Image (tube, rainbow, N blue to C red; front, side, top):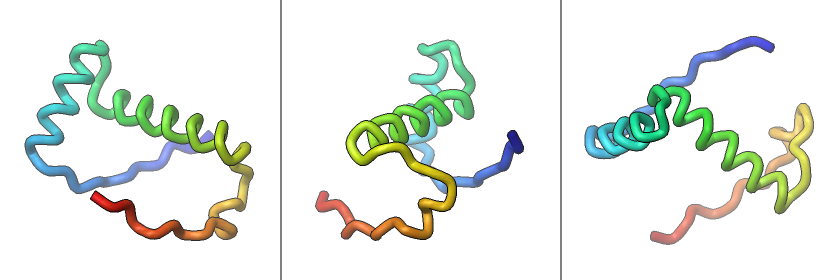
Length: 67
């Protein structure tokens, strides 16, 4: 499996809070983000079914969430 990099923009406060949670869990910030992404995908797949290779092209974009 190839490992790819992804850059994100994140405000200082949110990044500081991420580091607190990651430290509490005994993980790096990067590892904590991967856990969160995996959890998000697991939740999505339990609701919508397994995501297959090439499914990205078939995704219908949902309207933005209301705040």
